[in-house]
Image 1 (cartoon, rainbow, N blue to C red):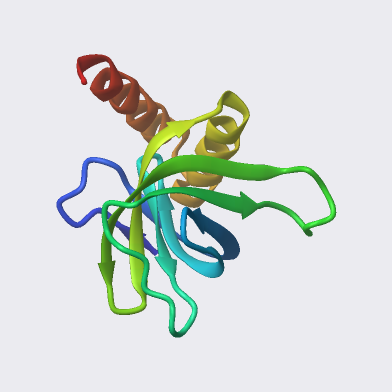
Image 2: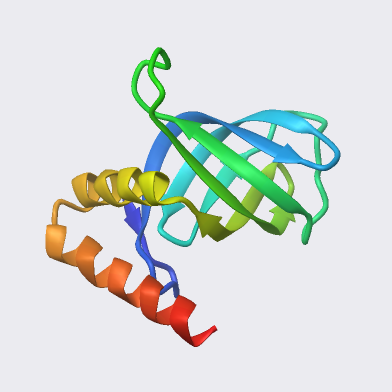
Length: 127
């Protein structure tokens, strides 16, 4: 399922575990969807981090036995109930390569992921 609801970057559903690390907690979360610009997480019960807080999201890929991981540093853009939206502020080259491939595979259109990556680079250059 792909959702673009008023967003420049396509979000793809991706059911996977992830770690959300903030200055206050280290939480195991569930990924709801992901894009080149961020990730939407399902938080564990009883944990409500504050919006605006800096964070790190680690998303292991594969069977968990390897070193493949998408790691993005960001900010909690919004926290609503048990969901937290993380806006990516920085990501290393290896992680963006894995993320781009993941999105490309889910979109089924390599040219769409190329357009999104160019838009992301253009947006970063104008910021």
